[in-house]
Length: 277
Image 1: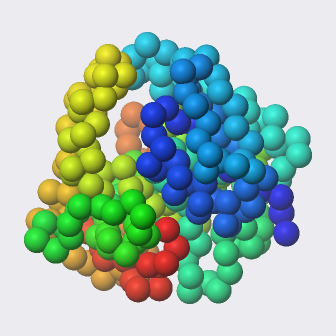
Image 2: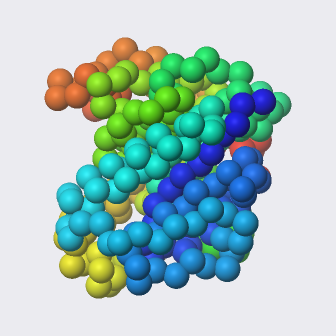
């Protein structure tokens, strides 16, 4: 079995971090998790017991500088960890890299079977709230008991796993000067847009307003509109199609990012996934 670490960076985000620690701790062991807190005004929560935590000086003063600064720090931290680990998983706290339960193995065991290709990606699934069918999120319950509909979104087919020191692009969306490899049976589940009420609450967070997050937060409401209005496609068939398209197609401005030519497909996650997150 390969030795695998997971890293993330957060600021004022205990809701998602709690789930991140719970999930990756179960998959990899808490001793292999590394959480970096953006700002000396941040407190390490009690639920991070057993996790490697570090509180850093505040990074950047606006969205752009914060994104660039964060990814530079994370790339450097991952490079250090790769002296002791075979792989490092880098995600935001609202993202969960999962192995398909149909494979019969957990995340660590599945990743251990894969060749070291520099970076590895799961197919991106962006969860929204399906109007009239799904209600507000209860953080005490599993996310996938409450949300089942997702947009197949290239933005979340990220270069989440690296096997050697590489420079991630902002948000882990790519690795600089390197291609991406989408792994069949591997998915990145993004929950940052899955609760419209929580998104609206974030508009009132002073630290985010100061950094210019208003436009970004408004865009987050679009996912729920899409999963509510678009037809629901067959999961197996359309995930396979999306994976093939994203492997072959590139946007003209970034050859090392996946693209889908503007195609928007919504799928419903099968029952076998519901207890994972």
